[in-house]
Length: 299
Image (cartoon, rainbow, N blue to C red; front, side, top):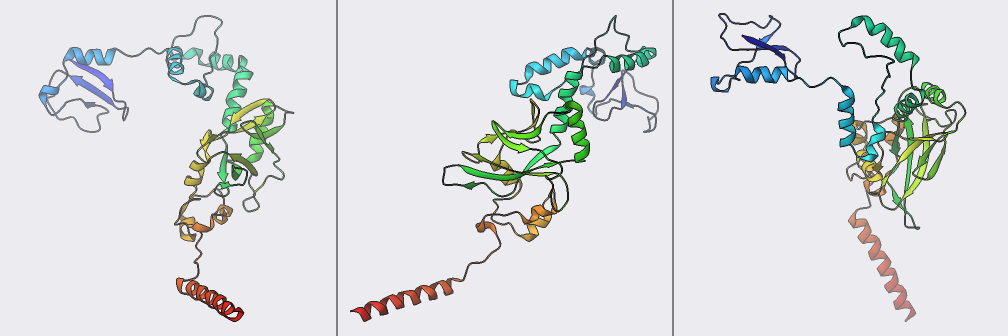
């Protein structure tokens, strides 16, 4: 007697038997046997039957609700499920004749409001943020963060997708409650690669403070890729604060554009050499000598 099953790793067909085969099973038979090397570890027949027959239910809604219960409130808006209502009973899973009717039913009963939420989430994830330089502490007690919002993919297709959601609403970016300006695909471009690039500037109390940049479409808002996050994380990922940064390191890093290799970095990490100790000592000695000479003359 044998029980058929599949493996989750390679999705291959396996059989669990309570007998020994009379011949060796090759590798081209389309299936393999589950046979541990230690005979004491072989599963009993009832164990094999229970493991292969106790299949989970196919009701995806139950799994979806279980997932929602395990998520925090802040993560709920990152998950979507599109349900289709049936006028009558659902067709059987093996009823292939109902596939065409199901396709037409999905197209006719689409939920535009829900689809727009999904579409906006996908389009917003195409935008990402990069620091232009490491955050600098200013005299007002805040860190100044200067960077750029860039875009993956064709900016015209992204614009068409956004306009399919809202034809007249303004398109811009927000940092929490602070506006970072409206989007202009004609002027917000990189002078090197000619791709979308919007320069932005905002303030944080400390580089480890979490911030959020969102795409605003009319009254709708959606976080862009990578947020919420701290500016310290971006600074570390972009090697803006490494003490070993030089041109060779810049060539090995992944850049969104060639212009990023010329990013401004703190003087302490640039490859610049200060004058030698000898010259500094010499200059100091001369200044001391002049002071001594002047003092001696005045006396």
